Length: 147
Image 1 (tube, rainbow, N blue to C red):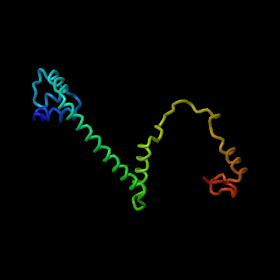
Image 2 (image 1 turned 45 degrees about the vertical axis):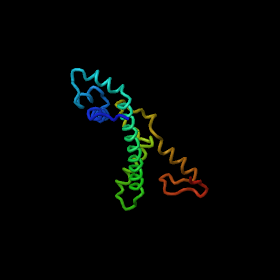
Image 3 (image 1 turned 30 degrees about the vertical axis):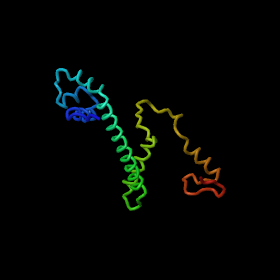
Image 4 (image 1 turned 30 degrees about the horizontal axis):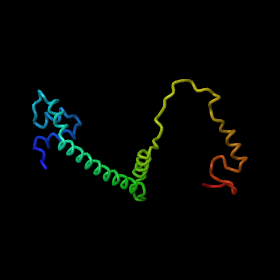
């Protein structure tokens, strides 16, 4: 089986860096005047395509392993009771972010707030007290189910 020439190997390396075949051909030492034609010709070669695919698979495998290790590190930081609270909180936030549970972005409102939109705190406290809850939240009624 024929191997890649040094320039073809350099083309593969440069192509993986930029995903731009024309730029990769120039950086690999092919003439700039016909770099687009040369790049297309190189990409049509079976060995070059196979080398690119093999390298992409290697990169993907490495990335998957590194991602797994990074997640393990975040979990370890989150669970380390000796770590500062800020570190543990940041690790927990990063884990939630990666799981798709991002905090909502800040929304600014420049309009007037209507009185009807306000929360009736006194009314809510009365309802809580009637249900047996301390409105301040310091006690829970005996019959309450805690999940």
